[in-house]
Length: 272
Image (cartoon, rainbow, N blue to C red; front, side, top):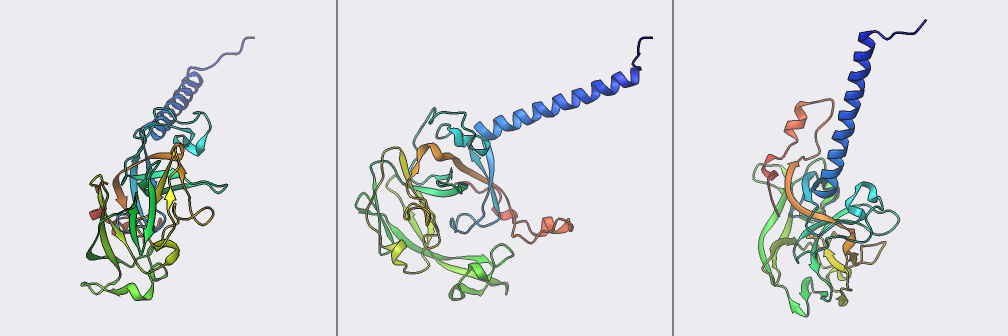
C-alpha cells in the first residue's frame, strides 16, 4: 500500500524549509553588508583617549580604502592582495588587523604615509622634519567607572569632579597636521621610548599609525611584539565613521534597568 503524507505534515515541512531559506538569505545579507559596507567595532582600551573611551561602539565604513582578505570575517583569504585600493589621508582613524600570530582588530590614527618620515622629539611630533603644531588646551577629564577604574588612571591624575565624583584628569593638546586635520592628544609624562625616537621612514605600501593617548599606545613607534610597526595597507579594514553606543561598563545582564543607567547617550552620534 502506498504511503500517504497528510496535508499538515506537508505544510509543516514547507514552513520549516521556508524559514531556513529566509535565515540563510538574512545571514548572507549581513555577511555582505559587514564585509563591504560597514561593520560595528567596540573600544577595548584607552589608547585612543580622548576621542574614544573604553565601552564606545562605533561603525566602521568598509569601502574607503578598498578591500582585502581582512575585509572579510575571520580574514578568510578569498580576496588576493588589495582591490580598489586607495590610500588613507593623514589624520584618518582606521581599524586594521594587527600583525603577528595573535592578530586582532585594532584602531589607531594615520600619521605617516608611504615616503614620509616620522619622529617624536620631546613629546612633539615631527612629520617630514617639520614640527606638527601642538597647542595646550583644557585638561581632559573622564569619570572613573567600571570599565575605566583607578587601575587605569595613575594616582597623580585622579581627582574629584564638580559633581563630587571621582575623575581622571589628563593634560590635553591639539595637534594639526599639514592637511588641516586637527584632533586632540594626551601627553601624560616624559617617557623617552615614546617621546624621543629615531626617524621612521615609512616604506611603500604601508602606513605609520599612532594612538591619540601618546603615552599609553602600542603603535607604529614600537616593533612587534611590543607594538605594531609599519602596517601594510591591505591590513586596513575600514575608516571609523560614527559612535552609535557607549557604556560605562556597569550594566548587568540580569538587571535590565542597568542597561540604561550604564549608557552614555552624550557620546552617541560623534563623528570623526
